[in-house]
Image 1 (cartoon, rainbow, N blue to C red):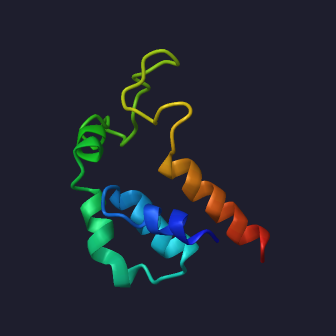
Image 2: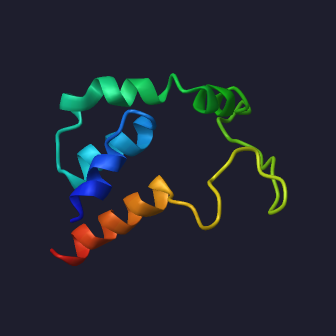
Amino acid sequence: MNGQSLDWLLEDKNPAIKYRTLTEICGKSQEEYQDVYDSIWEQKSIVNMMSKQDENGRLKLEGTLTKQPCSFGTVGKENKWITFYALLAEKYRML
């Protein structure tokens, strides 16, 4: 695994990426990083999304291909989610 990519995913800027990298790629225990997990739920985007749940806990689609409710990144730019899933796939390919 590329150490620079892993370090990048472990930055504090995105708790969800950091937590999933620690637990799913690095194999750390979930209990050891409970504080990182808790911080995910404090992010403005998560709080906003969860406030829109209906009485059944479901969310309605608010975006289209041309108008999205949140940014998933820019085409041609580095993307932590894509990098995370690529490293996760590489981990399981090597098993």
